[in-house]
Length: 423
Image 1: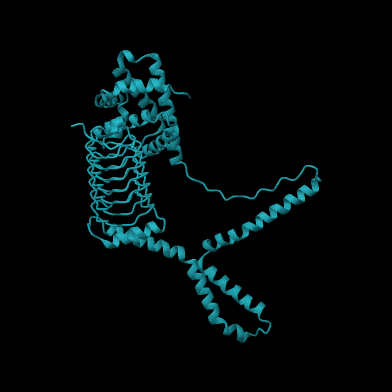
Image 2: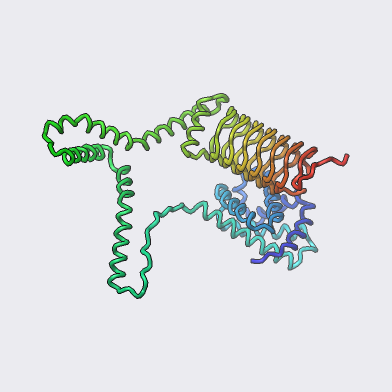
């Protein structure tokens, strides 16, 4: 579908003049026409929700010429709405309420051409969001690769082709035997593995030693015990790892509400090193200074007012995380995902946020003094009242409208120039 980008941009500029009123009117129109949707917002700050709507619309319009950047954002937005209880049938009333609200504010500028442009845009947006929602809710099935028989030239006899395919299939099955044995090893009961190990070792002793006698078998009993013990040790590794993870989570849970807990820091680091997801972690108010959570999954985590000074969160996933009023001075968040994260009034002084994804993040009144935001994506972010003095915004994806209301004295702007106030 080809979108009328010029019409969308021009009409949205007119709406932005009444942005706050537009957002409030949208929800009024939505609830008036669809009162059954109001319960979805009972636990939501409607003013905050209005701001998110505006940020999302700004994000879409400003990136509509860059579909490769917009598509993953819309799919992520659709996946995110699953958690709010949004199902596919709710998209139509939302689209209709938006069209009604656009007509309400554009008035004489709401022409058939403009209506078609927005209808086409909302149809495309809905399709991408539903696709993202589908990918989030569909179980990921990983199939084992199969070896396909190589094509046989047609001039070869049918019998030869059949024999070749049969041979290749047999080889393919033989290659899978070690994998099947390994799978069976982990699935089989421990007592069965112990018996099989002892029997196999005894058989090996018999085969290798031509002068085998009963006394020699009995003499090898200690060796057999050692082998069986080693096999069982390996067999029980997953159970020990699960037990370790349970103990680590127990340490984290026991420290809930406790500000200083070095045991919690070690437990979180160990869990992350083992590849365990920390999604939804609740460590609000915790002291996590210098913690190393490289590449951690902390999406939807509650780290409000926590102290993460000088922490290593390089490439971490903090999408939708609550970091309001958190101490993040000197933190390494390079290449981190912070889409829709709440960072209001957070202290990010001298933090590394280069190449980070901050799409639609709430950075209102945050301290970003001296922060490295080079190549960061800030489309749709709320920077109202944010302090960006001496920050590096070179090549950052952020509009003048989004920077309006932020303190920028001495900041390096996206075009590489240094901001100087006109006063």
